[in-house]
Length: 331
Image 1: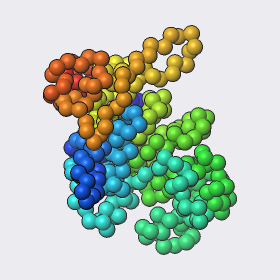
Image 2: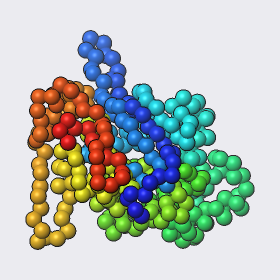
Image 3: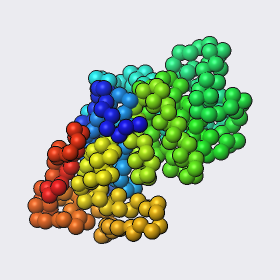
Image 4: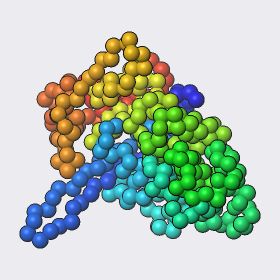
């Protein structure tokens, strides 16, 4: 898979997406400020492309992914999928649109019903969306099991009888059942052993090559991100601070936060000295974010302008033809 592979056309376009959580008002208690979990995020995903969202815990990656699918209702913004605005659809219209937008959850056990056998779990979306013939569903389930590397007889097992990697394969089979155009992968390998992670990631890449599926891949493991992504978007405190193709971002990052993230990646050769860059202080609260650039309280390049003016995410010149966007006054 080439990181510089240009998408044929835009499948998903997210513009100024916001999700603010407002605390319930209590009698005789001052109203708390809203928690700005996601605050003005914009990005695109092309057909057959993998865009990864990365950043430290609490930066808003999962909230963004679930808001795109309306599993969490966004506060404002625009989510256009295949030219259609998703945020204005009714509940029934959105239900029908979910045939094309599926999700793989982070926890491969909690996301599977313990009362259903594996075959029933994968067949459930087929039944919900009109494949009424039991024989057709059984045939489709067996085909899906083969695609994700599960034996056909495993269809009669319950989720607790599978290993973690097998459960995640089961979740992938369920997501594939309706031939979606986009799959949101919410840290799909973070709960798995390293060897199993490699199997699942390679499976996702093989399925993308075969079926042309686009992925919105949420992760914090940069080694996995480097392996699977076409492009990478870096998030910090509800904002996207850098977007670039995989090779450009890992070889020539521009934003100071991205540089610090990449410096934390373990070096495989123990004889190679690691150049660690440590972040100072704790992340600010999303209920009371800093003025100006949200990273200025921890940035080694901070100057006065950073404290008052928020930098726009704008394109920078690169040696390649790819677009490299950075939100920094000095990079």
